[in-house]
Structure formats: C-alpha cells, structure tokens
Length: 94
Image 1 (cartoon, helix red, strand yellow):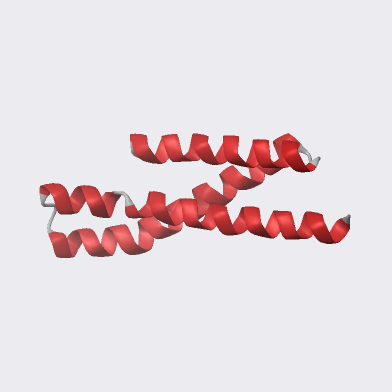
Image 2 (cartoon, helix red, strand yellow):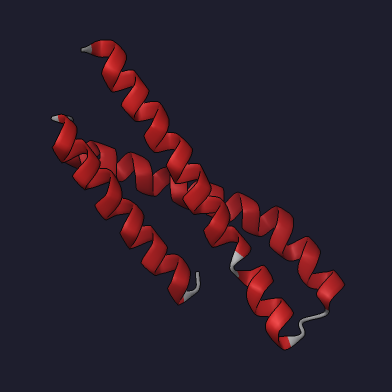
C-alpha cells in the first residue's frame, strides 16, 4: 500500500468512529467494519484495475502514479457506501 492509501485507511477509521459516536452505535465495531471494507475493496481494485492498466501505461511516471491511486479511490468509494448502509440499518432499527 502506498502512503496515500494508508492515510486514507486512517481517515476511514476516524470517519466511521466519529459517525458511530454521533449516532450512538458501537465505535470500534463500526471502525473495524469500515477498515475491512476499505481494505477488501482496495485489494480488489488493485488486482483488477491497477494490474491491467499498468501494463497498458507501461509504467510511465505520472500515468503510473495516477493509476496507482485508483485502488485508494475505489476503497474510499466503497467505504462511503458501507457507511451509508450502516446508517440506514441504524435508522431502521431505532
């Protein structure tokens, strides 16, 4: 994982923890769910998109850097939808 990916993972943990705190849900459980969802989606996007597109770009400087960040973007998008699902489940249970 690149530094940006690790910082995004830390941001996802903090984001889920504070969201759970505001809504009276279990903090650590939400943080772990968010982190696991981020990491799984990061690895899936890395395996599918990053490896396929890096062959096409042939490891040129800027293109390789941008393609290398696609798994991070995919992980953050997945974390957004996971958070949205957790919030909707919390609203229906109250």
